[in-house]
Length: 168
Image (cartoon, rainbow, N blue to C red; front, side, top):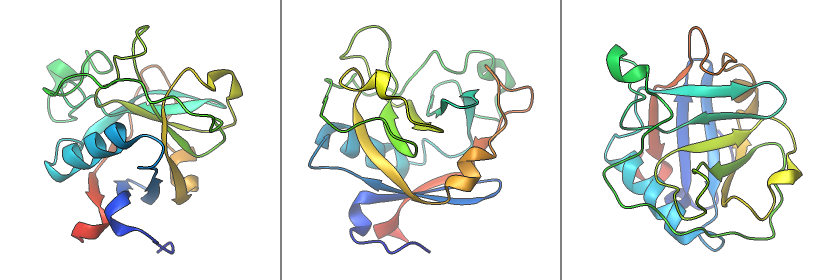
């Protein structure tokens, strides 16, 4: 496993190919980091699909309202929902959207991020300063690269479980 410096601010996403270890950035985006940990600890991200995966760009997931693989009716709506928590204020920074960066998905409103997030499959600097960066993959990027592509994918990948490293 990766050298985890801060277990309280590290999440481990289990996907079908293995674990993706993400270092969260509480000094950059404290609200987004807290929300991710809160939803992970509640099991809200478990079994949620990657509903939008664009080759050479990013893999998006985290629709806890509609993305559960066990609920085929809601699965058709994956990508349109969030959690029952209030939306988050944008926490923009100077950090670039490089490959492996975790960003907050949102609607056109900058203050509309909730539970959805994306992991960059390649650099996407056109997003810089427009979306919140709140983590980066430190191990397991090959598993992110292997997530089935599509909008939505014909057979979507999913997050089997999401855990805060301090809880393991």
